[in-house]
Length: 517
Ligand SMILES: Nc1ncnc2c1ncn2[C@@H]1O[C@H](COP(=O)(O)OP(=O)(O)O)[C@@H](O)[C@H]1O
Ligand SMILES: O=C(CO)[C@@H](O)[C@H](O)COP(=O)(O)O
Image (cartoon, rainbow, N blue to C red; front, side):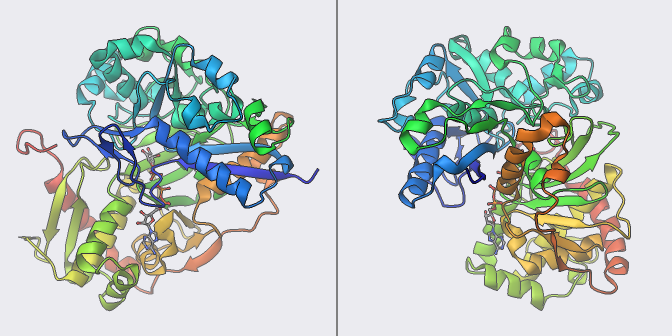
């Protein structure tokens, strides 16, 4: 049988097409529903199931030969959670191949709108968790991160305190990634170490749930989560539903699914010393590290391709959606016009700097639009082209400043590996290269999480025999050089980076002076 691997990365925000989905009164945009408090953000769980149904139906009608698939894996947005109602395991196991899954699973969820990564409504749960374990730094030392509002433990604690009935009805809690794996497996799939480290619940060193964190979030939680597993684990064979409905082979294996950023690390074949920057809905920056020191900023996750090492991650919430808003306001909704504006303005923007946070940022905690002229005076607007450059330069200066706070140093051999939707845009990549004074590489597909899922599926089949992912994919195409820094960029941006870091202190969210969160 020819070996093929299928990769699935659908349980993200589905914003590759503007998805409007009506469930009850909740209309999602870009796959997410922002509640009236502007803090709570959810997605209907059945929307994700329907998306999977639609994708597989499309593949079937295009003649895709599912019988050739030897193994599959996938990735989902990190931190989001799914609440399976008691008894759902039977529905999942006995799903009738005559019907689409979203119809069969209609009654399977104790919480129909899943909290997702964009949610920031759990401030009180975060402070409870930090208090319970002896403070923010101590929580970071155990789980790799101080308490973050989007992290799953805090989301579970909120559901338990606000909707105890739903919590009691729940027999299993999945991450978005392990939820997707469960659908293919026809059984509850375990959470993998790497995505599990985005919950504020996993002891990242020992790779077991932390009893004190579990207890601080909700009672009986360990049982509802199941035991975590290494990210390369083969979970079992594909469920009969997929064999009968789509013609998968009964031998097709399901390899543990993981988070989108961990899957991207695999897809980009990141090496130590490289820096990966994903320009998707969120912007993220991640590194492969051996000996992490968890701090109050950033996250340390278990490495998805090597259980002995780690991955450092910074997440910036105001990524593509922010760029899209400025594109719409200043470039008539056109990326071409947006790119022309970058070309028509000079590097360094004549000293004009900006901070663009339509929603409360994660790194740093700040909200609002703040523009400064070359004399550090606050101004209310910029000409359109200046606005576009200020946005892009500001986004990349923040990334370099916060990566350096994590201990990362740009070296002569530094490679930036760029991925995500905006990595298609060379003008944006040029600014990235100049601000970091390092070459930027891309891979053939901007969707490195998908590619990484395929690589991980192959790796899963041989990982038990100690073969590394690097060995498995050594014949895959290398990342390609996209842009190199412009001469003089380092001298230009060094003083600007210093100014940007100082101004950032002025815009950081202060709950006593700013009522909006
Ligand atoms: N030419 C482009 N220039 C800048 N941004 C782009 C371009 N093409 C697509 N994008 C952005 O890419 C985003 C999607 O990126 P993607 O990596 O698919 O998102 P996700 O992180 O949700 O998987 C879109 O929101 C869009 O704004
Ligand atoms: O919260 C994080 C990482 O900590 C996000 O990066 C999510 O994992 C989803 O990202 P998108 O793929 O939607 O950008």
